[in-house]
Image 1 (cartoon, rainbow, N blue to C red):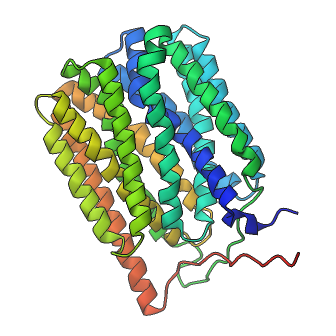
Image 2 (image 1 turned 180 degrees about the vertical axis):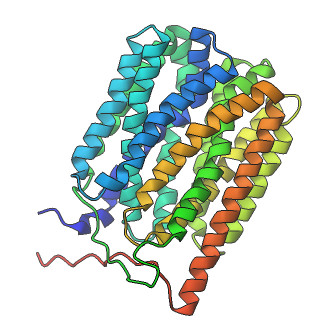
Length: 399
């Protein structure tokens, strides 16, 4: 019989990593996707932003509903449906030639991605030592898109265009579906601590909004990195390789977070990472060169995901019920849903430097809010009146 003890098995972490990789795969290659769609249908920056909006619109709808199904439905079934929607949406877009149909398929894939990533986030939130586990989960979520960013421009898009790219993504999704076998049917039972303010701490919602702000602005810039490189007349293959370097950087950030843990707390890492992000935006402003672009790609994503690893851990600790941590996927989706179009609009009207200022401001707001939640949680713990309930220890199996 399925027990909640299975959530802490290594196989469960591996399956959570696979679901997370499938859920964020399109976001990882979003610069190439926007570029391929824009080239095929001759779109400007604002119109290209609608492609990101379509994907993250579906993504947000799926993740927002996770609060309803994350503790009710069989997780294996959820994983199967999520990955089926991703692959099906990609195949639908690949087989159609109209802009509207392509967007429709991207919306469907976004719904599937949201389901897969919400499940992944819920699984890891139920595990012990969530800071480290979230950091580990972020690693394959960058490795898979990094490989695609190297392979797609050189060997797929140049030969078969947008359709070939979408077929390739669908194929990778089906490979990741093999790990559904390791997904547990359910998570851990949670004990809710009764307090004077009720069962749900408002701090979890503050931390979710902090993640939304931090992720949204930077994600908007990420979506246009291929377009930004075009301003410098950079070679498309070189751009793909440098974007792959960016995803390698996103691997390093979570690895450092996993090694560091909470040894220096959760506030100082967020401050350091955010300062690096701001430096990258300042450095990226002005004339684009291959060297400048490469340096930013080596630093920006690593610092970005280094901070996100800690923010996810903060959300998991602030959640008193085990239900709301899954909404971190909604926060990511909603942030990207608005981030792409806003950055596209700002860049189209005032240039990319103004877009960098917008993204930097949202990053500062998000980091500051998350650090405030850390301070409040620590204060509650020291006063002996904490509202954050710890998950039940897994029962020892007698046989």
